[in-house]
Every structure is written in C-alpha cells, then in structure tokens.
Length: 320
Image (cartoon, rainbow, N blue to C red):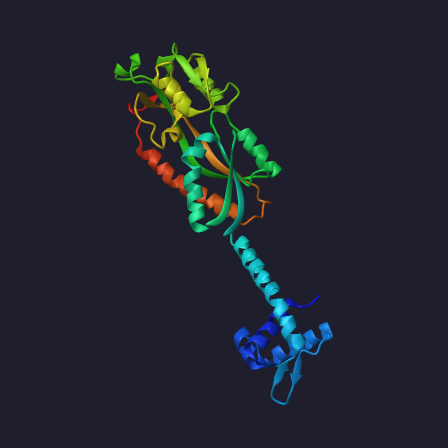
C-alpha cells in the first residue's frame, strides 16, 4: 500500500516546483523530501523525476499521480480532523437518559451549555424512571443517566457505574390556595391525615417515600389520584382535589400561583428531599461522556442556587 505521507509530499513538490520549496512548506529538509520521493518511486515502479545536477523535474507520471492523490489527501485530512474533534469531545453523539422533571428543568440548560462548547455534537434524549434508566445505562442504550433517589427509600446504584451528585431536591407539602389549613399559623404533614392525597404511581420511589413519611406521622394517606407528571399533580392540587408532596425541581421553572407550599421534615427533623445524580459507566471511553457530565454538573449548580432562593409560600414546618 502506498504511503499517504509520500503522496502528500509528491503533491507539494509538483505544486511548488522543487524539493527545496516543498521541504520549506512541509517542514522537512530537502534531503528528507528526496528520500521520500525515492521510496515512492520504488513502491510504484515509476520514474517520477528527471533528475539533473541541481534540479528534479516531475515526469508526466508524477503529475498524474499527484493529481489523483489530491482528493485522497483532502479526504484523509478531513478524517484526521474528525478524529481530533471526536477525541476532544467536540464532535459525535451522546445519548442522555433523564427522568421527566429533570428533563424539563435541568437537562435543557446542560445541553445548551454543551452545544455552545461543541456545536457539532448531536445529543439524543430519552426519558424514564431510575430503574429504567439504570438498565438502559448498563445495556449501553444511553451514555449518561440523570436519576434520583429518596433517603427514606434507599437505592444502591450498580457497582459498575459512577454516580456524580448533582443537587438536593427538597420536597414541599402542597395544598390548594383555598384549603382550610392555610389560615392556621402552623401546620404540617400530620394535619393533613384526613385529606385526599395525590401521588406518583404506587410502585414508584416517590409513593413509597410518601407512605413512609405518613406512617412516621401516624397515618396512612388516602391516595385517590396518581400521576408521575408533577405538572398534573400540581394542577390537581390547584383544583382543590387533594394535597401532595411536590419536588422543588418541579417548580424551578416557575409554576405560577394557586397553591400554598410548606417545607417538610421527617420524624427525625431532617429536611425531606430527593437526591439527583448523573450516572455513567467508567468503561465507556467516549470523550463526550465526561464533557456531558460536566455540563450537567454546572447546570445543576445554577439550578440549585435558584431553588435555594425560592421560598415556599408558608414558613417551614416539621412532619409532626
């Protein structure tokens, strides 16, 4: 197989008119150019130069070979440029998995940050709950996964993934604007024991977390409505159909009025929250993975500050 570097040198010699000029252009010595051309003649079996005492004139064969090589050299240069971009994380495809609330409040800012840094990157987004996303990560269907867990419902991540903390997402006890309890100077979780509750699907970590909180407060919540979409949950609360625990992340983009909210703590006095992480597999060597994790981490930092500045409409209260 012909040496592409020799072909590139040949094209430069033919274009510039001499070994010396080609050497200056390519950063070689004239002797190195001469050696490359001799090697190319041996490889092709062609006489490429009519050599004189002080000159080397390209033959017709040399001009033809140089002409045919130009397109190949351009293609190779493009491939080399793409390879450098891929290695630097400036080009390629990254597949992101996320749960719906983060897909709305966190992921868009991270993707925008990533694309400002590397506009040639293609980002694919898929949604799911943590169990689905962890399975997709382990199967290779996604490169990174944004997931959550509740401290009251411990979840262990697989040993073959790296978990990077992004933010703490406090939960807020949420009731309608006209709810009877909002006129009280102090109220908490136990005061809503007789109310209708709105929760996520029964097998979800959010529903299990609610059940444990309520059990610690001495009651079992009567759940009439279930949805994993916190926009739906909030609208049901706003309509006066029940009460709910709503993550602050769900309100991070501004959900408007119509409800009263109160920070809530568990029976030990700890703030009730869920923890948000980004997971990736350390054996995934794609350069875009650490770049994407960093974009998510930075976007989460800004979002965490925004959540911290937002205050529930009522003063914090403990669960009991």
